[in-house]
Every structure is written in C-alpha cells, then in structure tokens.
Image (cartoon, rainbow, N blue to C red):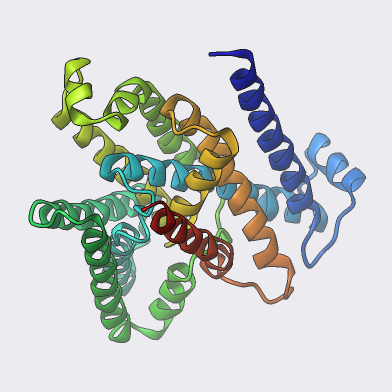
Length: 338
C-alpha cells in the first residue's frame, strides 16, 4: 500500500470520526428541550439522573443516540455483506425484502404475545426478526437459482417485501386497538423508546457479528475477484456464502427488532463509503461502513426529532429522502457505464 492510499484512508477515517463526534454532541443537545454543552457535560460527568434534565439525557437521549449509532452501523455493514454476496450495489436488506420478512414475523409474535398479556423480551424479538430475515433470504436464494439477471432478482426481492408488508398489514387489521398502536409506532421505524437494557443486548449482538465480518475480510476480498480466483486461494465458497447470509441476517434482524424497518441505509451508505475511500476492500469497508452508517443514521434521526418538533418523523421517511436519490444515482451511473 503506497503512501497516497494510506493518506486517503486516514483522511476518510478521521473525517468520519469527526462527523460522528459532532453529531453525537449535536443530538444530545438538540430536541424539544434544548440543553447547552456545559449542561450536558455537567449531567454526564456528575451522573445526575434524578432531575428532569438528567432524566432526559440519561434515560432518553443517550440510549437513543447509542442505538442510532450501533444499529445504523449494523445496517450499513449488513448491506455491504449482501452487496458482496450478490455482486450488486443495489442489494440491501430493505430492497431485497429481508427487513420486511423480519418485520412480518416480529409483528406476528408481538400480536400473539400482547393478545395473551405476555411481554416479550429482546432475545425473542431478535430471534423472531432473524427467522423472518432467513425466510426472505431463503426465498431470494431460491429465486436466484432460477434467474440469471440480477435486475430481475432485485425486482423479485421488492415483490417479496410487498408480500410480507401486505401480510403484516392484514394481521394488524385484526389486532386489538392497543396492539395496533404499539405495532404502528414500531413498524414506521424509530430509535425512540430504547432503554439501556436494549442497548446492552444490541451492543453484544452487533460487536460479535462485526468481529466475524472483519475476520472474513480476506476471503470476501478474494470472492470479490471472482469465484474461480477465490477457490484457487483456498476459499470454501459454500461456507463463505452461508457465513455472509447468517451475518447479514443477524445484523438486519437486530436492527428490525429494536428500531423497526429502516430503508435505504444498507444500499446508500456502502456506496458513499466506497466513493469516499476509493476502494471496496472488505478490510476497509467493514469498519468504515459501520462508521458511515452510524453517521448517516445519527444525522437522519436528528432531522426526524427536530425539524417538526415536538412532532417526530419516522426514521425511514428521513432515510428515504436522503437514501433514495443516492440509489437512483447508482442506477444511472451503472447504466452510463454499460
């Protein structure tokens, strides 16, 4: 690696870290109740949590900021793993219907449990979302064996997402009114209502998954150069594909379980990071993609909370506003290259 490439990587990481720090400070200060930086610093360092402002910082804003950071990064890495698997920059958990599958199973579990007065914990939510993700991924893989065109596969993924959404809406129609409210708020996508216990669970899940994804950087790099080259390098293609499926499903399931379905982050962020670093090497993209996803979701959550405060927008609405144009640009750029 020459000096110019190392410098570009260093500048990219420093830029992402600065943006992340700025957005963390901005998010913790901004909201319907505005707090100054000295006030927030005093509350954090003195561990003040009994006052109204202390409750806002410790019990509302900090868990929300950390969840946006962790889940945003997880969603971006999940998108990158799927793009590596399918060798297509348009592949992502939302477009392929994976998030919708997770949403469907979680909705079913929530309605059944709430109807019986059972409060489900984080582990059950993640397991339900993971099963839903695997169902959608299984359908996508089955279709991929029948079609060769990646564009048709993407369209099929979108259709699977619509089917899962339709089933979810059908189930919600026959749910109790109180259950509908809970499901409606969750299904729109939001980082609100997350507590420290949720943050602890998602941190463990995402950190372990990220560690495995980083360890797969070398075989993924070989896989990007073609299956023949990867096999010659000693990569077990079937095992690698299975690992990519499981890791991407776990990461997207974790996001859906805690924050609901969030659109376009898994497609837009990896592409932006590739353009920033001028590379698609997994050893660079996995950590950089995580930072990029964290920055993107913190920025979108800030807009969702503050633009029409005290009314809050769904996070998917904001990510779609910024992410959809990037996806359109990707498609136009690929078309011009052809």
